[in-house]
Image (tube, rainbow, N blue to C red; front, side):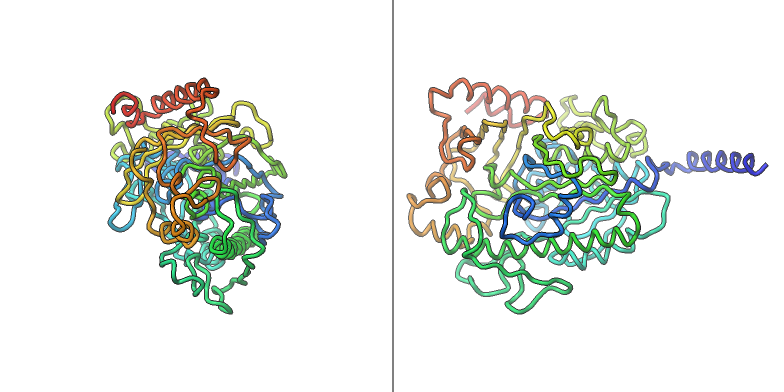
Length: 506
């Protein structure tokens, strides 16, 4: 009798849900997702081989999960990269080429659908805390906005406690974005006064709840794409301090998940939007800008302790999370039709360029969830990048194809000098070398070679990881150059890139 009553009640509930238009959850409540996005953080931490940096919480996350050693952003600019992370589409398809804020005013197409929208219609509770930096808001719509000082992950984590602990039959998606270790404003002659450009407080001070870790410039490790100078070492020490602050925020966030008894029900992903805020990295598609950290902790232990060598990029994040949420069609690699059907027609992209090639639910990436425990999975050997300079004076589009050994950069606007973000131009690391003149060394290049670039840059990144020797004009590598050009064109055709026209004129 009781079982019969329950069956009838369940049937009635299902009818009411269908009638009301409220989606049933795609999964039970134990399919939570936390995506942590740092700001301008290269893979600099203990688990990535830096013995100086103190990052015990990030190292613990890596030990419990999967550490990807070939993860790449698709564009090394903040707003633009975040739009890729949240849409699964390259910038030339989602429309957000540059910064959202202030007079830059770039934004995505207003009929685009994004990860939080897909997850909402797949039955998830969604919330964001910290840096947002994309537009328009209806496209990147989260149900809840959680306040938090973006330079203090510990306070941010505490502010998320209520959302994480909420009792609900719906799983949750938390987008947790700190502003560390982003470079702030200022001029070169301010160094070494504090607070500094990397958000660190004055000596002897600390952010609430944070134990500041201060580094000696003599101890830092200078990567090969930067000059080993006093100015650079001083800035790297400040950058390291900001990273240690991120680490404490991640530690507190993990503890909040454990306190809420959902740690074993939550997929946790740690990334950065792109590499360090230094000339030679951020705003470029050199390795310093593209190579990024990726730590993935699956709640059932899948991929635990694996050091993964698959080449993945940020267009793969949305499909991976949707796959985990049960909202991705594994055959078509598109968003499931049952999820798309719940999104109002005027809120989902059809094809703003009127080519007929883009359909609602299309994604440029693919889920890496099925290979999480396969360190050397076959078929993950190429990534692409599509970048346009992010400030209002932004005209400098670039396209990249990156394989295991070879990398081709196409500087579409190569007759122009490379543009500088205002904060990178003011960086003491750059200004010290700029003052020495065009022949001054800057990493494996010179100041002149950094500013004035050829149409094509071809690098053997296995033997020349800091991209010092451009082989594009070397007859011995003409075949490789031609092959990669063809591969790049095919990528542009597949992703409906309007800049493909530049091959045929001028």
